[in-house]
Length: 284
DNA sequence: GTCCAGGCTCTTT
DNA sequence: AAAGAGCATGGA
Image 1 (cartoon, rainbow, N blue to C red):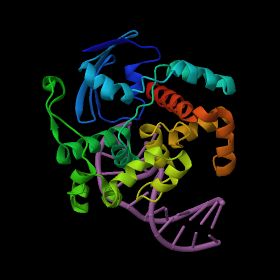
Image 2 (image 1 turned 60 degrees about the vertical axis):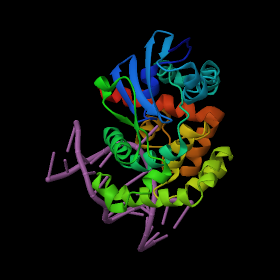
Image 3 (image 1 turned 90 degrees about the vertical axis):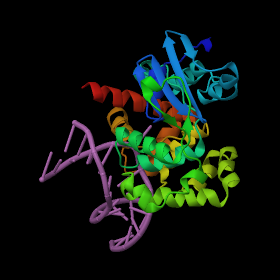
Image 4 (image 1 turned 45 degrees about the vertical axis):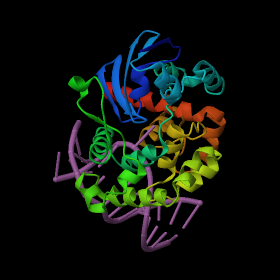
C-alpha cells in the first residue's frame, strides 16, 4: 500500500466529475476502479490518501494517472486571477484533478457519450469491457465483482456492428466500429496524437467517425493533458448562459470569450464549472 | 406519453 | 458558415 499526504485531492470529486466511467463508489472516500490493466482501490481520510497497490505500480502508473505531479494550487490561483467569479465552483470542486487516461479508451468512451446519459455511458463501457476486455484478478471481488480491462483496439476489432448494436449503444455502433478500424490502420500514428500540439491533434481526431468538436475536446483533455481544450456540452452551455449571458450561437465570439476569460487553464475551468453545475442540479 | 442526455452526421440554405 | 432533421436507447 502507498500512503501519501496530498493537497488538492478529493477522490469523490475526481472520479465523479464525468471524466472517467470505470470507478465504483464504495463510499464517498472509498473507490475501486480499473485502468492500465490494473484494479485499484483508493481510500481517503482528509489529506491522507491510500492507494491500495504496490510502490512500483503507483510510481509506474497511478501517479501519472492521477496527475500527481501537477500543482493544482497554482492552477486555481491562475484561474481566479482572470476569472474571480469562478470562486464558488473552484471551492466546491477544489479537489478535482484531471486524469491521464488511455487515448483509445477515451476515444470510444466519448463517442458513446454523445447525446447520452452518464449512467448509461457507464453501463455501455462496462459491457464493452466485460465482452471484449481481459479479466483482471483483484482482492475486492466481494465488493465489485470481477473486473475487466477496457478492450484494446485489437480486442475491439473482433466486434461487428451488429455485436455492438446488441450491447445497446444504438446508432453509435457504426461510429465505434469505424473509429476502431481507423485506429487499427496505424496504431502508432494514433498514439502519436499525444505528442502533437492541441490544434493539430484535435484536427486529426475530428476525422474519426462519431467525433465532433465536443468529443474531441474531451478525449484530449482526459488523455493528453490538453488543458487548452474546453468541451462545450449541454451543462456548460447552461452555465455560460447563466453566469456570463453569452450568446451560444456565435461560435467564434464564444471561443474568444472563453480564451480570454480562462486562458491556458481553461480545461480545468471547464471541469470545475461542469462539476459545480451538475452537482447542484442533482441536489435541487 | 413527452422530454432529454458530457452531440454527431448529413442535408439544405 | 450556419441552421435543421434525424438519430437508438433508457431514465425522469
